[in-house]
Structure formats: structure tokens, C-alpha cells
Picture 1 (cartoon, rainbow, N blue to C red):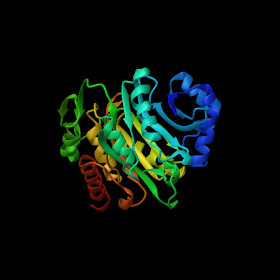
Picture 2 (cartoon, helix red, strand yellow):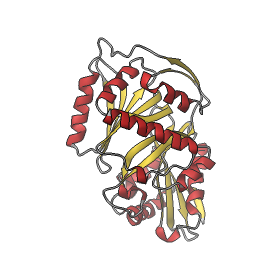
Picture 3 (tube, helix red, strand yellow):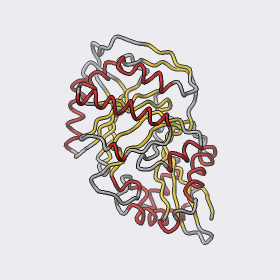
Picture 4 (spheres, rainbow, N blue to C red):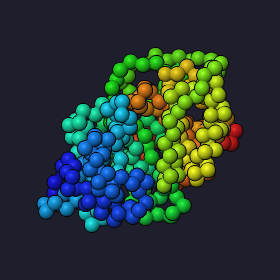
Amino acid sequence: MEFDFFRAEDAPGIARLFLEVYGEGYPIKIYYVPERLIEENASGNIISSVARTPDGEVIGHDALVRMDNTALVYENAAGAVLPAFRGKGIFPLLFKHSIVDASERFGVEGLIGEPVCSHIHLQKICMELGFKELGLEIDLMPASADGMERNRSERISVLMGVFKYKPGVGVVHVPSPYKAQLEYLYSGLNVERTFFFPDEVLPAEGISRGSVSLFEKAQVARVSMEQIGSDFDSFLVRKEKEAREKGTMVLQWWLPLSSPFAPAAVDVLRAGGHFLGGILPCRPGGDGLLMQKVDRSPDLGGISLYTEHARRIGEMVLRDWESVTRG
């Protein structure tokens, strides 16, 4: 068995792998199109790690996916092993190749992980590689996204955290509802932060700006705020309406904690049914706070968390969901 970096000749085998494991249900279509996967690996937007048999057959894949062209910040994604080769210890070695070898070879500065909560196996592997748990994304993925058979109405929640991040120095504007939660989440990170507690009011002027990523197959919309303006209330209503018209079930908002207006934006989001997701210290532009909204009650029975730290994060997220949705 060989664990290696991507070669152009691997691309057709990766497409076949994804078809066999996920059918046509994997939400990111690049992995089904050999030409595009070759281009994305050549550009460094995707860094694929591959497991091959001695005769060159692709039997496993894992990837690092660049989050922003302005920084060497990646997220781990697109893990798969052919069913016939499961239970042979292949994926842990492939995953380690991706997280350790690939990130070192390509100079990755920030590396985000999202292990699924439908089982604890990947969470265990992540912890062995130094993963820092920082949040819980509720109902992020459709039932087919991890290649396992289950009720099609179910969705999969994921843990959120980092393998790598630049310690650095920064400023965090703390929303008052989350003072204790942010104190707990930051306590496990080796970062130097100055915490401020500003008045929770939107600016008197300025236009809100944010980039929207729509994952139609997964029914997820993600808004990354670049500027919080005086019109944030109407900006939120407009973006949510646009997302709902596309059939979105999950809404995610990333707020820059470097902004003194982030706490006011949190108040607006909570009033609209959004609740805490977590933090990330290595998002493009600095530390980010995730707020999320789902269209139904979370499936608590489908969320398995490995560590006590993860379970505490799960409790704080679900407690905030209850507070926001039930008053």
C-alpha cells in the first residue's frame, strides 16, 4: 500500500472512488471531474493525498482545500476509502499523510478540521494529531456525505477546530451573551489576545458587506462578513431570504471578532434565531465567530462526541440553541 501526493494520473481513479463511495451525493463536484481536480491540485487550491495499491489503483483520498487566495489557510475535506478496503487501517494513515506530510510540504499556515459526529472514529484520529476542538456545526451535511447508509432525512453535525494556526497577537470584541463561552474556547489556544467589551450597537453609518458561499447540494449557505454596517438588520433579512429561495436548510454566519460591531451583529442574529457555533483563530482576516441557524430541532441522538471538551462545547451550543429558539 502506498500513501502519496497527488499525480495527474490519479484523477480518474479518484472520480471512480467518489462515485462508488458517495454515488453522486458528495456536495463538492470537483472530485468527480478529473480535469478540474488536476487543475485545482496544480494551482494549490486543493492538496490531495492518495492511497494506492501496488498496481496503482486509487483506493483512498483525502484533501486540504484552500479557504482564501490571500492566505495559506486550508480545511481538511473529501476523505474516502473504497468499501472493499475498509477496516484495514488505511484511512488513519492516509489522513495523517494529509494533515502532517502534505501540510508541511506545502507550507500550510492554518489548517481547519471538521470531523463528523455520526461516529467518534475520526475524532479519535484527529486528537492524536493535535486537533483543538473549538465548535460544533449542527446539521452541516446531508445524510450521504460520509458515505454511510442511513435515513435520508437525517443530517450530520461536525466538530470544528484546528490542527495548525499561527499564534500571533490579536483583538477580540466579546459579545456579552458569550463571555463565558469564549473564555472557555480561547483557554485551550496558544494565542495572545486582548479582549474588549464594547457597547453592543451597530455603527451609525456604513454598508454591510459579506461574501456568500452557497452549497446547493448540501443545502447550506455560509456568509463571511467583511464589514458590519448600519444596515446589518436588513442585510441579514435579505441574505436569509435569498438562501431560503435556494432551498437552504442551514445558515452560517462568520463574524470578524476584530470588529467592534461584532457583538451588535450577534444580538441581531440571535433575535433572528441564530445561535452559537464556535470560534476559529485562523480564518482569513483573523479570528471568526460562527453563528448558525437550522430549520428544525437538532438530532441529538445522531451527535457522538469523543472527548469531555467536545461534550462541553456541545452542551454550550445546544444550550444556546434552546435559549434562542425557545426563549
